[in-house]
Amino acid sequence: AISQLESILARRPESAFAAQFLGKFLLEAQRPTDADRVLTRLADRGQGGPDALLLLAQARLQLGRPAEAILWLEKALLLRPRDTVIQGQLREAKAKQAERR
Image (cartoon, rainbow, N blue to C red):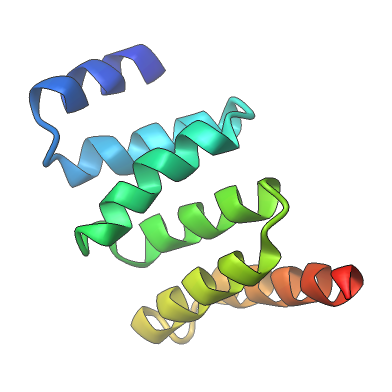
């Protein structure tokens, strides 16, 4: 699936759908650096919505960057304030940030 999505993005770099799913599959494959690259581009273009922002935050958490994850989760929560998954991830990121202090 990863190589197919990479191929789609090579032909259609504007495809938010392909980028979001590529980021998801890269995270599942324990490739957070690659996922972060794809999902950051998506977020920078203002595409993907709260689901893409959640994935980007998960990549930042896997990379040991909870402060950055918190920022993306807060943006996702503004778009979907009642989302319990985003709320839970935000609590987790804040706990990891507190551990680092």
